[in-house]
Image 1 (tube, rainbow, N blue to C red):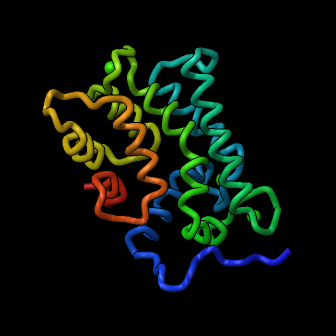
Image 2: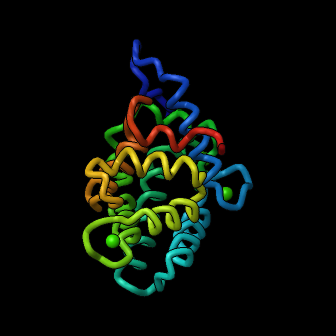
Image 3: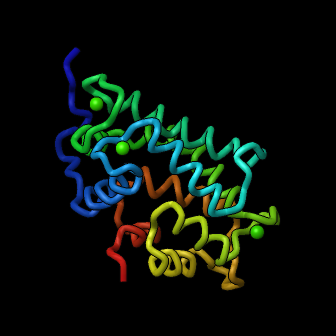
Length: 189
Ligand SMILES: [Ca+2]
Ligand SMILES: [Ca+2]
Ligand SMILES: [Ca+2]
């Protein structure tokens, strides 16, 4: 089987998107061995559940594990070109031309994380819960505060769960750097 690039002519990948992908790779490679593997995603799910005091066996907990697995399996199926069961940095970067596949891959993941961040189940994510969840995932606190402020259009200190889920999907699938969530990639301040 030969590998054909999914990039079409004229769809130059912006440096900003590349930067975002590199940042993501480092965050997802939770054991830091230079490859993405199923274990990295199990660890990521366990860590964020622990940070949120959510039992792994609860409905939300099971959804988070299932979302992470689905996300990992989607990445592996789409990107593990040499079939060794893990994703190298170059395999990860090569996914840039296929944002539609990525959307299906991250939908459950995004929804489960948004539901987890709504700790009291009122349909909204409050700043404190947001920061606990996001810093457990590896994002820088200051960047998360900036993002939350931009998403909180009503200015009432909370963001609707569905808005946050859609924003997570955008983060993984958009080729644009002109979206609020792009700021998550900025270096720690
Ligand atoms: Ca790894
Ligand atoms: Ca591979
Ligand atoms: Ca809430």
